[in-house]
Length: 356
Image 1 (cartoon, rainbow, N blue to C red):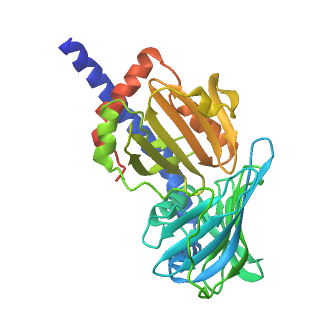
Image 2 (image 1 turned 180 degrees about the vertical axis):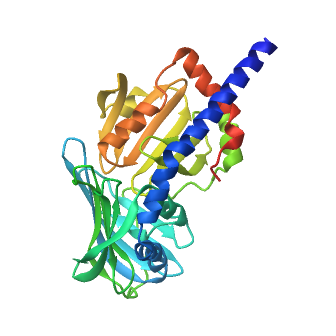
Image 3 (image 1 turned 90 degrees about the vertical axis):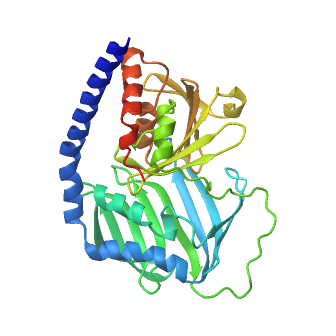
């Protein structure tokens, strides 16, 4: 038995080394090419948008809409107030698709992009996967803007941003699919970059939107989860990389893994157990790659299924084909010898996890 484990370990280690070398060979040129084609001034404007969002007092209304694979649009209106040194208060208007609620984001909290600006991690992913360039001038809510595009290797725009030329705030963000159609759109319908006249008071609401989980997981924590069999991936299809991982402790730990390519953002929630049929009673049962999943298209695309003793929940701001690729890449049932080998590779290489 000891000899078998040694042989399998050696084979798995060799495969892991080969795959790692293949990754460097196939991704190095693309990543470098995107960096060489990026405009430093465009990157500077995006980097400055985060600082502007922290230091500029403003009030406004954001319009957020997302299109599902069926072409249906879901829209929300968000009242936003920012007080420098305090944070950003957001009140989501109740709609037929969303109960509404309130959220507060402190100025010293981690951000995930959007109209609050890009964190260094997100900007690095954006510059690694796309050519970031200036694309002329525009106007949002009566304010002059500098337009920035994130372009694919074929030159098509995958994302578009409008940066206020006076304040540096990001006023509009568009996520585009391969056909140039908007998949997700966020912009200010009105904005007043002046100090609020009265102090913002958080009032009661139908629902309070939860702040990001405080228990952040480091590389060693993720390695421990993998060793214990948790299906934690460093990467997902379409150049999605793990950039944040957190855990919610309670009746059973829930792991929240955040992936992005700099534009699309995909959250994967993992929890041990079985799928409660009642929790997906209003969801659409569908087949993706021969596998049964439950789908729900609201402001975010959602998918849920159970496999190998875990419940998977995917929430995504991404084009539908990207979501389908993510769902297909995650575990669905047992896969015999190759599935066991893959889990063995995860355990053997968990010590080398580059996530920090």
